[in-house]
Amino acid sequence: MNNPIKNARPKLPPWIRVKVSAGESRDKVESLIGQYKLHTVCQSAKCPNLCECWHKQTATFMILGGECTRNCTFCAVDHSRSPSPPDPEEPAKIAEAAKAMKLRYVVVTSVTRDDLPDGGASHFAQTIREIKKKIPSAKVEVLTPDFGGSVESLKLVTDAGPDVFNHNMETVERLSREIRSGADFRRSLMVLKSAFELGKGKFSVKSGLMVGLGETDSEIEGTICEIRKTGAEILTIGQYLPPTGKHRRLDRYVHPDTFEKWKIFAGKLGFRSVASGPLVRSSYNAENFFV
Image (cartoon, rainbow, N blue to C red; front, side, top):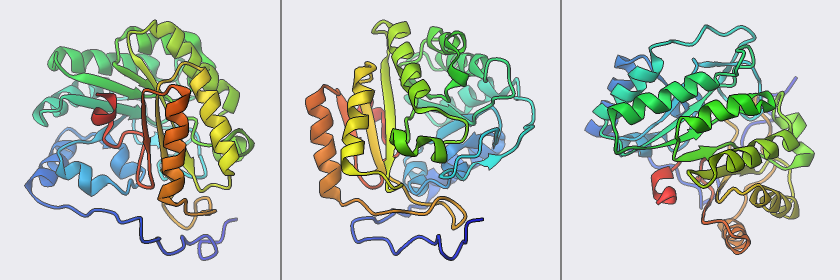
């Protein structure tokens, strides 16, 4: 068993400073999320950008409940082998909350639900449709699990018309199995490639990586190449920060110069948009990078 003291995160380097924002805007977001009884990845994953994003009146909605059937070593989301059934009213509630927040760009992710026949794909599709119906001008980005590799489930989501389809690779192939519970590196590449082929140019495909898990710089560059081969054109790279002492130990803090090097490297491969930096997260400033 991991030792929380041994795994405690080293002191943050000077280039990582989390913004703390309070005020009416943040309070409004928190109130709306409570009012509609919704989950956000901001809270569940203990995102370091929560204060900044909520102050800007934006949030990443997390559907299919607050319990994940997988138990990844980097993630703070609650784990359960038998989570509660999805709330059939959740897609409509999210659309209402997004409208109340006056969002022009809505990001929707989920826990992984291996217990559901379609992995929750139909719930994703309904959420996209509800948002588009309630806010016709809004753009919708979805960050999905791998659906067990089911192309049929994947098609349910892509047919609903997202503007961005995102599936994170998270880490390099050598570390994938020990870090990503129940996931598979090659299967995730297949998800990205299938989404690109199903989309036929109607939406952008996106993926993301964390660093500081024990990978090497060359492994990151190799993984960036693999992601680009799938057709993905938007990429995020951010610093892994253990949410608690019980999670996977931090291996290193990556200097901003290295993040910039990877951004240039990815750009030369043909990625249309790259966000690479210590506090970059998959949905952080997603609207800006989409534009």
